[in-house]
Image (tube, rainbow, N blue to C red; front, side, top):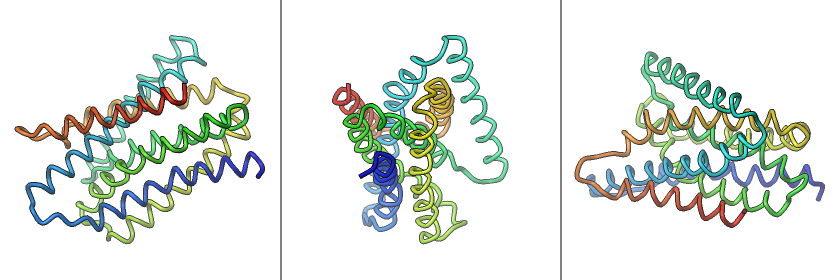
Length: 237
């Protein structure tokens, strides 16, 4: 198989976790409402922990390595500010897409990195695809519940949207493979900018949504999500 085809296939595999997570959220049925609420908050927190691991272990270290310190810090702050504005616009429009935004800010730059890595580090790219799949699964679950709860789209339409989002993975991997493998500065800038956006969204929307007084499982879920990312980073490293 040609390397470019392999990059597209791996990124599609990672992206399909988004609709799979959505489908699990659509068909989960827990009769006890209190237990269901705890499970949903724990899954949301797990996804938040996975996002934090992507920031701390992939996006920021890889991005900062390719950029001057001043530019890296500026792009991180710009990412946070940009997505604070986006979050404000969504809130004014009466909807919340924070979980979807955070999921895409994690998935799309990592798909670009996957494509770029496949040129020189195929084994690392394969492991990154597996870790992206494991991260996208709980993020897709939580994002589906977030959108579906608003009642503006049917479950079937939300899942179709998620399938379309999964299709963005091969597009980004193709860009990473064809363009960014020779331009680490641009890829690093994209990753740092995305990290700033994710960091804002995690603390503004995802962590508060996962918290409930008297419950300890969600916070432990965040730790488990970060541990997943740490395990993947150590295996890759």
